[in-house]
Image 1: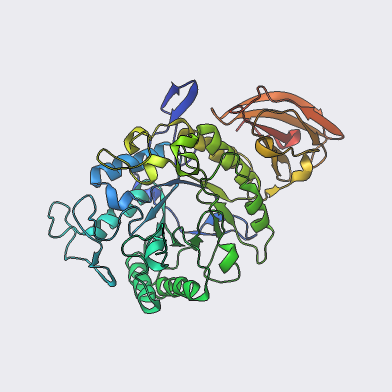
Image 2 (image 1 turned 135 degrees about the vertical axis):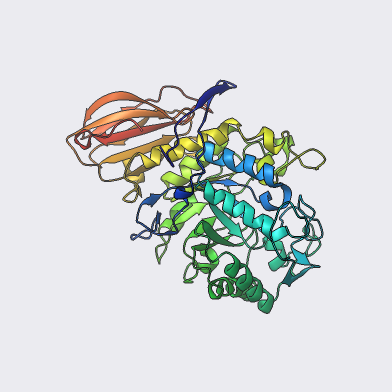
Length: 474
């Protein structure tokens, strides 16, 4: 299906199907550079092929895992159908005085003007193999598996001071304009020739003053002047989108939104839909939605986000106009392991086959089964979009349409929105990726559809195809 992956094993976990895909390390499969599509809505590879972004979030990958663990993790990424990992070069969870898994620090002291590098990069020689050699290894191993790295040069706390309680962590606000530019130029030069890089500035911070925004602009300019010509975006604080500050700036190639971790049924489709309408037209993605198995509103006392919750976030955002989706897991983003303190019930290596993570591949499978560069959000397909957790989200192309029903409520479709005299209707199960044909219908009037099951956890996608287009099951 993708990167010549063929299903190898199927298992059942808590009554939910888990599919694993074999990975490929074929050097010929090195990723082509990404660019924005001609219509400004999506991403494509440099040869013009559509690219559906499906990211796993691994902010602490460079900091916390050794080489063998990096390989284990990235192979799981490829096996599960992800094609992007979101990573920060300078640690999010710790501070700059804590070495990585191999005992190395990124900087001399806390000075971003002074990256710590050594001559050589032999991993068997600890005098040669430094922090940045390990970062190279992560990026190059990802490339060998056909995976892009959405790379934050630094987590936001180091560049945008957020020292007021409760954020008064060490080392915050280390960059001035000159250092932002210099570090950007250095890291931009280091990775200028890596085709699988996407630059992500910010890092969970709000650049709410012009002085803060100037720090970001300087880093963007430094990366460009260092030769980093890859796509670039900004990762904001929860509830915000990069469009709030940088919509009109040329360096921002697409918008990132963080719907965050505050509650179940959080309506991430609202900001995606708003960004979709903004000018100039830019692609948009929810790059940090609710994390599977994380505590709701940052506390497990409120319960934990389920596989259903992460599926709902994915289909709501994609059908509202996102060019892809980023998944997150509470243990994986921080690479939680024994001896570390966090409100997590699993370790990272126990979370690789957790159901919701496995279900993300079916989002990609569905979207790649139909021409998605022409796809638009279209709520006029449904007579009543419903509200709250039952909210229906609809999208269509010229000769197909899809409606996401989060809780299996019956709904009615205004037919005639796509081409063809007759449409074929199917149910798509987001837990298994399996389609079931319902039947053929005249493409006119209003038609009611009732999903196979209802209630929380029973989400379904209705697919309507122009019968003459000859589409097969996804």
